[in-house]
Image (tube, rainbow, N blue to C red):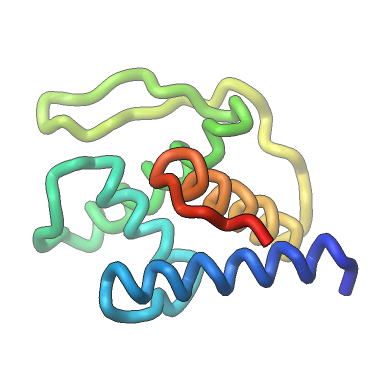
Length: 121
C-alpha cells in the first residue's frame, strides 16, 4: 500500500471515530457516511425516509462532495426543498477501488471544509 493510501485510510478511520462520537455509533461503511451527509445537506433533520429517499440522500451527498472538485453544480431545490445537482465535468474513468478512494477523499474534504472537523495528521 502506498503512503498516500495509508494516509487516506488513517484520515478515513479518524473521520469514522469522530462521527461515532457525534452520532453514538460508528458508520458501518461508505454509504452510511454518505447517508449522513445527505441528511445534513437536505437540512430537514433526522426522520423516517423511504428506500427511494435514502437513495436520493446518498445521491445528494455524492453530488455535494464531488462538487468540491467542480464535478457537480447545484441547480436548485424542488418544491419539497430537495436539492438537485447537474454534472458539469465528466467523472474520471477509474476502477472501483480508485472510485472508492476518490469518494473517501471528497468526503474527508467535505467534513474539513463544511463541518470544520480537523482531519490533519
